[in-house]
Length: 418
Length: 68
Image (cartoon, rainbow over all chains, first blue to last red; front, side, top):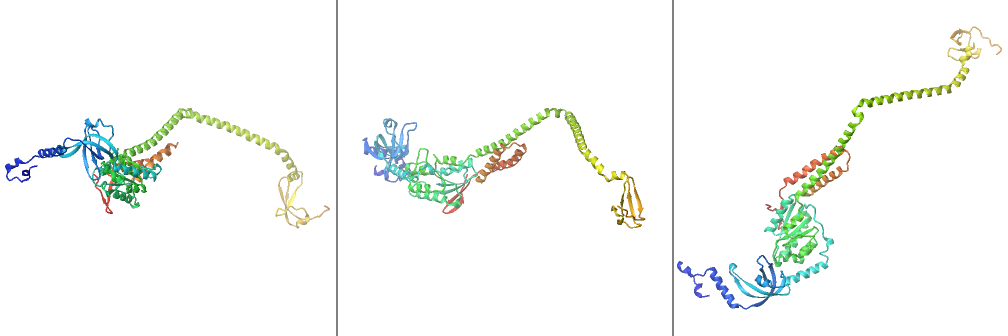
């Protein structure tokens, strides 16, 4: 670039001598492409932020190592010859040339051919930790706990800004606003994020918060962005959580270590909310179902009652109740007759069995003796006088005859020969 | 609030289940008298609550979190 371009313009008319953005970019493009010529060269790096074939058929991603990133375009006419399925974390050797994409004002590497160069460093770490934690039983299905059917209080560890928390709240408000939510804000990418996420999980485990489930969440991003959720400290916090944990990290195609350790993996943060919050419409349906069950039972019993009533109304007794009374009256007459006959029979039987005893009694009765002309004498006290010594001269006595009594006075006593 | 709601719903469903076992109209009617206010209470609760109560725990302090 010539030195005169660096000098400041002194007059308005000199502004015409400035380069436009397009011209400057073209200068850079010429410089860069001229420097590197049209020659192709190989670059080794790890694929990151891979965006697969869209409708155009082109592929875009970055190649990176531990210190730099390189934007890459792999156009349709070149990538259709490739037999490798490219993905994030893949270590590749790419043959291409450097170029400048003016509309974005950035340089990029245009790939002609690509070869697999082994797994990337992050992928290696991911696979190693996955293997280690699996061996420790962190992923065992038996230790996975079910989510509460109706969450009382949900703890969420995520960024307090951004779409993720808004998406979760939106779903919660729509589906089940009766629950409450406690957010423990955390970084979700960068070096210190993993410690904050782990600490958030531990905090929400405190009984005083009363949470019955935890969501750890973040939106989509590159493997580096999601990396905190692949750290052991987060896996440990999830594993030791007394409360079920839902891992909702990235998009459906992203898998992190926290997804494997968590009790439930959700494809996205919104999906986590859908899994957790019951739809209040279902509640209303359950209430209606319960009420209609009772109403149906009432209807059924009422119908039965009506049928029984109809049947009763059809019976002769209901149609002509007089007949029933007459029948019953006749029945009563018959029973009275029967009873009278029975009483007569009993009386006759008793009479015939008592007759000889009666006659015997009659024969022994003192009245029978009196009838024959004998009498009984008693003193004033009614005591029978058997001996003349039992009375005194002038004493009043009573003589009982067969018919009537005599009041007498003792005039004389004669002991006689008896 | 939500745990109470679940209990109420379960109570209601239990009443409904019990009603199917009863053969007496009087008993089912008395059960329906218990179920109706319970159902009304649940539906009212669902209707009146529009937004989740959200709090944020930051630097050891609890504060309301805007939920709109």
